[in-house]
Image (cartoon, rainbow, N blue to C red; front, top):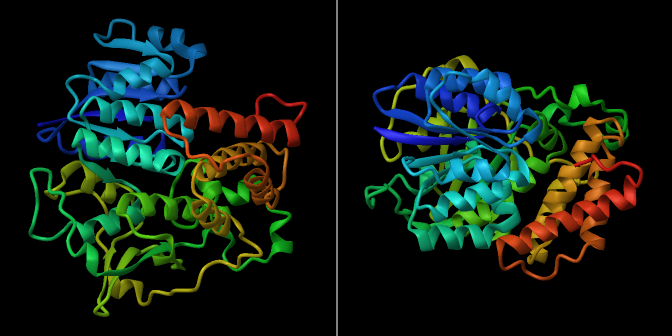
Length: 402
């Protein structure tokens, strides 16, 4: 029986994780849940899975959560401190880090320092503080299991050899890799030019053709920033230089990523676009388990298509991510913070779709990310400073954006 603490339980990854857990009560037990502010769904999850501990980050709804869980035997907490407590909950064996955005960094590090294995869906932890995060993983001796479908695909290729330690984690043929190939669906605007993108609405940008995701990641997918963040994540996860990480557009989202070796072989992981598969891989590793995911029917698919990277003139976010990675230091953290502010502003109707990369580019040029943050406190301070500078420059009359 594996005990799980789930951070971000009411988001899309969290809901899918609980779906997988629900179908395997003999293998998993939920001991802690944490969410942002969705009291209704969180309360239903607590009543069903009966964890030992529950936390909600938003102080304004804590009273409503206590009322909703009246009579339920569960320890409750609120705020960042509560989420951090869930991350380090004593009886947990595995922490699923599914909080969206920068808010997931501190709880993720808390879980590592508490000696918990991590199933990581929060890519921003590595974008903001990749060196710190990976150093903590190494020092703690815990397992890091990627949940993003692209990184799960690469993980399954690289770590699926016969050599395994107690956690099933020994990379096979690391020195034989030529390059990694991350696939991208192209989002809802594949093939659109810059002029057409100027009139994009939030409703259009949220309508992903293949994946059911939350708002922030859906917008990131539409701008292709999600793929840029994934390039940075892959760099830290697998230690592959950025010039050896390629992106190709694959609209069907059947091949989730590939590893190209020096002998000409290319190994890929395939499956229908359903997040329950990479979640199940992370939960069961180094084993496998059944899911309710629809089997892949290649004959029914008929054909798969591939295109080069998105047009950098229409979709500059991917290039900005490579640029931030090349700059090093705190530049990826600046990129992430500016993107979060810009996406929030777009969703609130304050800027247009094509202004998202413009705000990010301005931030990389005007916020000093040259110094490498050496601690969590320094990363969070750079994150706050970037957000402040972007708000002051573009939204001086609004204090709530991002």
